[in-house]
Length: 315
Image (cartoon, rainbow, N blue to C red; front, side, top):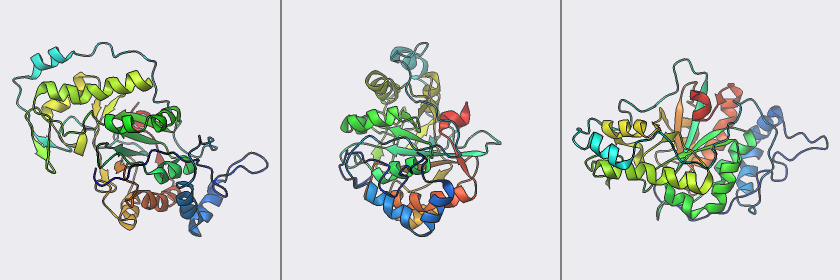
C-alpha cells in the first residue's frame, strides 16, 4: 500500500537451474527443490530470475496443490445484480454499523474443517502502489502454489500486458480490489489517513467500476471483493453480497502492507495452517515480501501444508 517502484515487466519463471526441464521433460522435483532451498540456491535463483527479461513462462509440472480453476469467465455482464439506483434506494437510510477488517459478513478464514490454506496478494495501484514484485510470482510458479490476486483498477491499467499473462495463468485467480483503493464506507469513515467512500452510491462505484473493467477488458468475472486497506462497514459488506461478491478479509497478515523485512515476512508465513487466509502484497518490489515468501514456502511444503485459491477452497 506504500512506497512502490514502477515496473511492469514480467520475467520468465524457468531460469537456468531453476525448474528447467531435464532430458525427460520433467521439472525439478520436490525433494530436489527443497534440497536446493537448504543450500540457498532456490532463493538466489528466484531473485536472479526476477531480474531477467520479460517472456511468457512455460508451465511447470504440478505438485501437490488443489486443481487450478481459471479465473476468466465468458465475456458477459453480470445478470441478476442490483443496479446502482436499486442499491441506493435500498441502503440510503441504513446505518453503517461496525467498521473494520473483520466485521460480520466478511470471510476472514476458510470454511470450518478446511485442510488447505489460501495465499491472497493485493496490487493496490496509485502513485506509490503500482509496482510489480516479480520475485513473488516467480516463486509461486516455481513451487506451483496457487494464489488469489486482488487487483485494483489503477494497477491493472498500469500493467495491461502483465494482466493478460496473469489472467491466462490458471495458477492464479484474479479478484476485485476496488476502483480507487478506498476503504468501503457509506459515510466516509477513514483509516490510516485514507478517507473512505462517502455514500451508498460511492460504495457501488468503488465495487462495480473495477468489476466491470476487469470483466470488459479481460473477461474476468470476480467473485470476491477486498476494499482498499481491507476496512469496510457492515452495510457496505451487505452491498457487496447484494452485488454477487463475497467480501474477503484475512486471518494472517503476512507483510503489514509490504512494510516488513524479509525475516519478519518469513516468520509470519511459517504460521500458515489449514483454514487460514493470508494477506500480502505483490506491488512493492522494494519490500521484504518476495524474499520472505521464497524462504518460508519450502518450510510449509515440508509440513505438507496445501494451498488453494479462494474459489477452490470455498466451492
